[in-house]
Length: 194
Image (cartoon, rainbow, N blue to C red; front, side):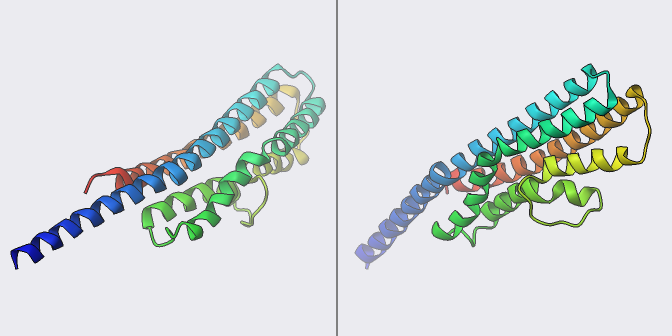
């Protein structure tokens, strides 16, 4: 009887160690690369929006400013799609890794998808739909909408575009904060010894 209890305890310890090893593997093979890619995409957004801000400040011609800025946004969107695509591909991996039922990991993945796809469009009352780069698309759309029926001088144009840029960066930072919060919860859950 004692031997049976000792075997049962030993088996429970083995299962706990196996689960801990599996959690560490999920963290290192899935969560860490996901967050590395996410951080890279976020850094790219912040860098791009900072570059747009500097371009606005240094411009002297409102028409040229708008055209140049919209071209720059298109260029950055085109040349940064790889990072966003990698992030979206992680949504498919949760099925392969059988982690669909893990609330914290799914919450993290959902926060990243929200960060990428719909956040900027929802904030400005636009219909939410999946597009390649909602952040830059939303910025471009807002600039075009805000300036389309206004005849502003360069100072007013700059002020309006800087306001739009700052609001966009503020939204990005808030959504980034949500992703980081979800990441910390998933990390603690996966790496906390039981």
